[in-house]
Length: 198
Image (cartoon, rainbow, N blue to C red; front, top):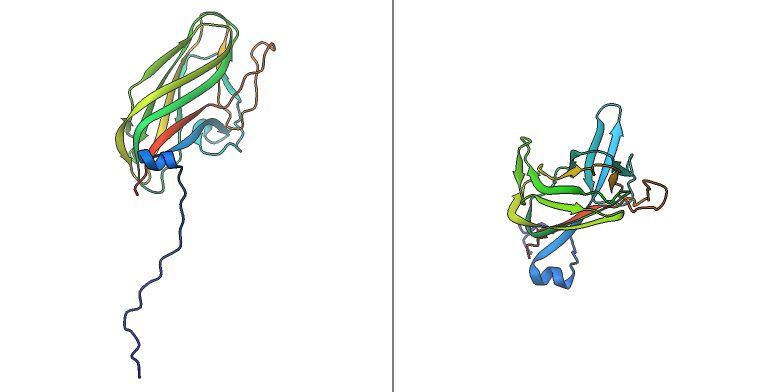
């Protein structure tokens, strides 16, 4: 009579993952995060990074202010490593030829709410009427984002001396206008490279 084995091996869960060939070739996978804003009576206005374009912000654009806006992701469920160059695409519009600017920097925010820079800060300027399209490269320091930590994209805007400028902060990409002469896109995002462990 055959004996029943004392230890029965556990059957692993079936899983599949698909990657672009280029991702595998350079060992990186890019994840898009869209700039957005929420607002409620408890927390007021909060700026966020979301991976969904189905969300509509309570404001389509941020207009007429010189200020620092911190866009936060939710806390990570698993540790991931950022590596390579992040790309920030900020879109908007202006109704003046006077110079406006944005400064961006990417942080890791620890569970203790400490900001750890992942990139240097970069300043981009614009001095023309019409659409504003910033494409900003942020070389990153290779860093582990631990469980519970989050990403923060800090965007500091400087308004022109006269007139107005705005950046889009709506993941759904609805259009807005400053002077009713032209509609501007509102979908701004950052592409963050994460190391693929194969």
